Image (cartoon, rainbow over all chains, first blue to last red; front, side, top):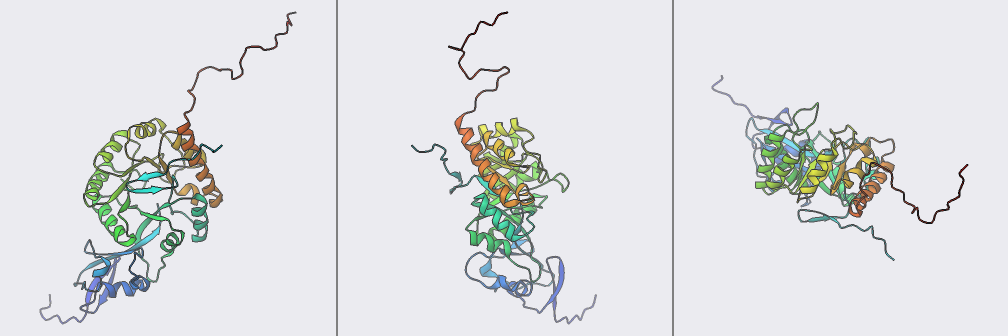
Length: 82
Length: 265
């Protein structure tokens, strides 16, 4: 393994797909990239939720939750079913 | 004179529902068709699944339920373990703004039958976490009792496997579950047509949950209307007290005073 790694991006897995993000990227950033309408916060449930490393991140914490390199992000929404 | 077919609303946890038909949204070929079916069904509570969003995807079903004023009942469909089900329920609570969850933990994707061990484990964790748990379960009176005892707000035994349309395969077990339960019993899965829904209600169930029987019917809107009538008819019939079954005929016309012609040859 390289001892002088100078990577300028971090790698996260979003809904099973690898993505490169700028260091310091937040949950809001990654949701905006996938489903822009979901970050339009009208202060009510929008049928969308996010988990990072198997822990739900409540909507008010999306802006302040910075993703670590290697984070596993799940973004789900209510869909027809059941 | 007033009709006497008015029925008490269904009460689950702290919510009253005017309709005893809970609809699912799965299997509908179009959102427009689904909307018409939901309206025709008269449902006030409707399931949704939680799935990964597609990039640039739309929030069609969520917007639809909001517009129609129908309470969402997120489910944990597709979960095989308690761990998956608990995380899915937590995501659903955040996404849908409700503590209610239809807890579904199935053993495999061939039978889609509930896994009792994982189901009970998940129910315990979710009840402890403050969820209103409506547990999809086997038609097993003992398991239904366990789920009720650990705090589920409703038990939802299957009539037959999901999507099979086989109706109520074990009416005696369903009747036994309904007879002793002190929480609402919702027959969930297996309904094929209106008579199945009516039978479930006649057996003493408090409500019926169905999706496929409507969404994959040739005319979903018409079938949704039929289900609404069937659930109401079955509920009223259950309260009316059916006649006992007899092995032999019993004349409904009195034999007294009948014309007695002496036609002896």
